[in-house]
Amino acid sequence: MKRFTFLIILLSSVLRIYAQESVEVRIDSIEMFVGQQVHVTLIAHAKENAKVEFPVFKPTQYITPGVEVLGSLEQEQKPEDNGFVARSTIYTLTSFDDTLYYLPPMTVKIDGKPYKSKSLALKVLTIEVDTTHVDQFFGPKDVQDNPFQWSDWNMSFWLSVLLLVCLAVTYYLYLRLRDNKPIIKTIHIVKRLLPHQKAMQQIEQIKADKMVSAEDSKEYYTRLTDTLRKYIEERYGFNAMEMTSGEIIEKLTATQDEKALSELRHLFLTADLVKFAKYSTLINENDMNLVNAIAFIDQTKLENVPVEETVKPQLTEEDQRSQKARRVLLAVITLLGITSALLLTYVVYTLYQLLY
Image (tube, rainbow, N blue to C red; front, side, top):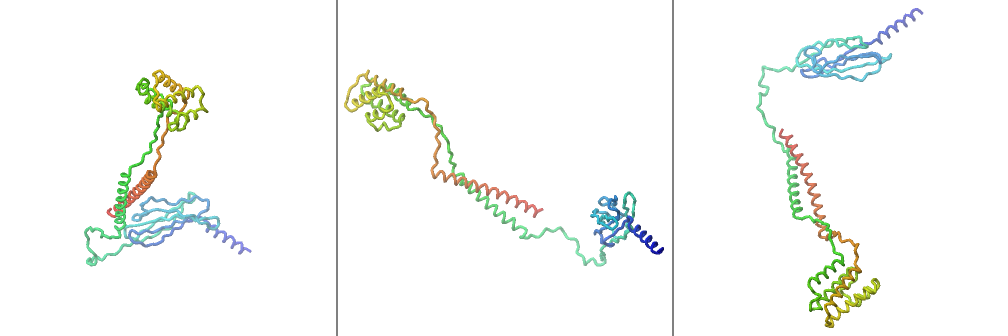
């Protein structure tokens, strides 16, 4: 029984000793050539919630004279038994002097308590040079240019050729576009005289020409009836210029009062007698017919009618094809311009890389 109790106490002591915080260090190689690198791994065994502080070295700081620390990298912690974890940091070292170095112990603080690792040794080797047989080495050389290789330049060459082709095609299409003048559609706003305004202008011209008192009554009545016929044609929308006087009066019977038509009928009858029967009229009769014509126009005129008209040009099929061709040329020129700019940028960049 006493032996069993003693065994339990001994085992518990061993476990407590094993479960204590500790620090260990490893090096991946104890030898290296000048300028090479080795890695030193510093491991701390501590409780999971313990605060662990590893040594911090600045870049190119010496861990010992002749051995530089290039950098450090903290690793992920690994779980262990009894609630402990292993935390580690890898230090990268290098040296440029061939000798045997003593790497002193590294201190890790666990919950503020320092723990030291064991020391290490690092042997830095150099390449032996046989200075007694210098002929086996090549002497110093002058500065030499890189040899020309077509494989380095062929892409830039062919892209430059393609760039020249694109520029030539672009210029040719530009000339075509310049010669193919654009079709500009202009919308015109035309001011038009109303039918009664045109008729009154013609009558005023008849007055100005003193046709009322002229001896040639035929010309006077021809101009006066033509003015009325044109007015009736534009006012009522039927072809009064090609109709007889009777047909015109019959056409107007449904829309005008008898008094206005009676005076108009008398005017047309007098005009027909003058033109076809050589009837002679007096000046006062000519004045009366002129007044009747003006009165008919005043009674039948339309006032509230737009006097401006928007005229939109109609393009022919040839003009439409010309516009379509211009749009296609412009799109192709734009595409070629963008392609040329990209090719030029790439060729310049490639040549810069090759020359510098």
